[in-house]
Amino acid sequence: MPEAPSHYLCNKPNGKVDDDVACNNSIIKINNKKALKYIEDVTSNADEIQKRVLAEILSSSARVEYLQRHGLDGRTDRDSFKKIMPVVTYEDLKPDIDRIADGDTSPILCSKPISEFLTSSGTSGGERKLMPTIEDELERRSLLYSLLMPVMDQSVPGLDKGKGMYFLFIKSEAKTPGGLLARPVLTSYYKSSHFKNTTQRYDPYTNYTSPIESILCPDSYQSMYSQMLCGLSQNEQVLRVGAVFASGFIRAIKFLEKHWVSLCHDIRNGTIDPEIRDSSVREAIMKILKPNPKLADFIEGECKKESWKGIITRVWPNTKYVDVIVTGTMSQYIPILDYYSNGLPLVCTMYASSECYFGLNLNPLCEPSEVSYTLIPTMAYFEFLPIHKTKGHDDSHSELERLVDLVNVELGQEYELVITTYAGLYRYRVGDILRVAGFKNKAPQFNFVCRKNVVLSIDSDKTDEVELQNAVKNGSNHLAQFGASLTEYTSCTDTSTIPGHYVLYWEISSRNETPIPVSVFEECCFAVEGSLNSVYRQGRVSESIGPLEIKIVENGTFDKLMDFALSQGASINQYKTPRCVKYAPIVELLDSKTVSNHFSTKCPQCVPGVKKWCMYP
Image (tube, rainbow, N blue to C red; front, side):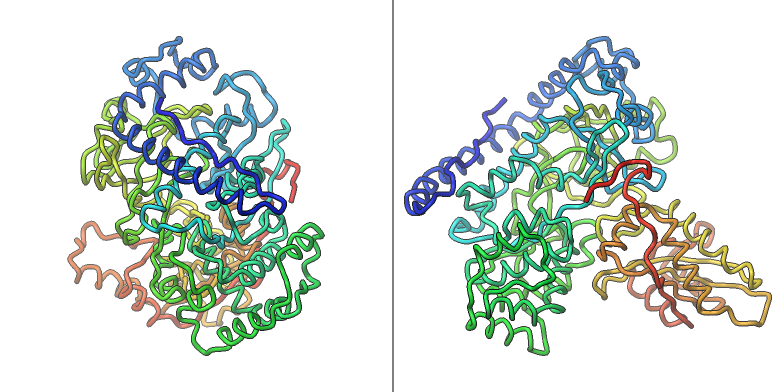
């Protein structure tokens, strides 16, 4: 394998900043050059490396139960693997994953011990999926992180001269009955010794305004407040801003809009709001915060202005770009990001999931609509299922034979991503739809198209059509007592409010003339939310998703919706009501026919994971 770039080595000093900076300037140049050479090498030899990766995975786990069960019998060649091993979904693996979660330590999926489960934002039976991982995977994830800034440095040099203001948060974690941790992949990474070490070394690329104590604070309000306070107090040093998702960064700006008076008070006096009770957070902030009346006056003056257009470049004037995910469903937030940032570049740096880290964007300053990710061949073994061939009988043998390898994908074709990982996933369908946009040497570059079957998403939630149908059915059951029933429905997401929320358009038929009380529609909202998956419910509780809204439309509205579709060229023989609408004229039509709207007035119950598990903050 090509030699991977090493990490930055100098530790943060006690009074020896100049020596350490000089040391790191040299190391930065060497490591950047090494990282770019690594990318060049692995993309130039993509197929050879993919063969080697598959052989490594299969040889190291040759005797695991899963591979033995399917009759691979120690073979490590690609042809045998493709003929023998099935392409699977999470439901196929769930019995084995449940055994591991319940404490079975035998080598079921992987020869190496499963160190923890990474919880996916996708769901199974309304609960987060559990993705097995091993200690070695942290090194692979760290490798991909180490490639990001050398690539970025080519487009935006000088980032080592300032800081990044990133809003990073942990989420709750659980222990399975067998004692393994189950938590989101980023919570796992932020709590790792690797992340702690990189933030404590003098590494200019992980030189964040937020102290690690703020990032690891389990209370979302205290974490957000303290991170914003530190970002504001170091505003002149900030060269880049961001969060994981676009929705998270917008939430941070809205937090500033709501709390700037308290934040300015603390900056002016060098104090910390009493609501910040975490002692480690308070101690970390006091090492950064000094009384600064001039800065407080400046921020106050900007926040008092009627318009918040360009607030990012006004408060953090040296910011060069916004680092957030704006592909897929996150693209709905691009207009508001442009408004707040005065049109700063929106940068999507990497492509990753709980199952595996995949690749990175080699042209980070491209337009959001043109973002493509180069898959790094050392991360996992990649296969691709052509989308035009997956309709109908997805899992037939003839279809599975049509899977193509990384270097054999075709320009412009769409595929579903299938992975085999070092941690025990074999020919696993990730559910991401990708389009081939080009090539870096022999490695393809992909546009992210969408998540398969997902119709609604605000933050990290992903609601598919079947789940939405079941939730709507449960909610509409409350209408029966008034002699009413749901005739037709559709949905959309509304991100004009922060946080965004789901909107359902309901057309109702009623046998009674008695009006349905508002409280009943509110109960309908609550029942729908309670029927959605745990990721959605957790988002509601943490206020990253707003209350669900039901809009009641006039009778005949959905006939008019069909007429509109037919006027646009749809076939009357094939027309069916869309369960999610995004096209602005259709949303405008539905809104124009709305006679009343109702919101959920309470949060749904949320217990992440399986209820019998032990929960930890």
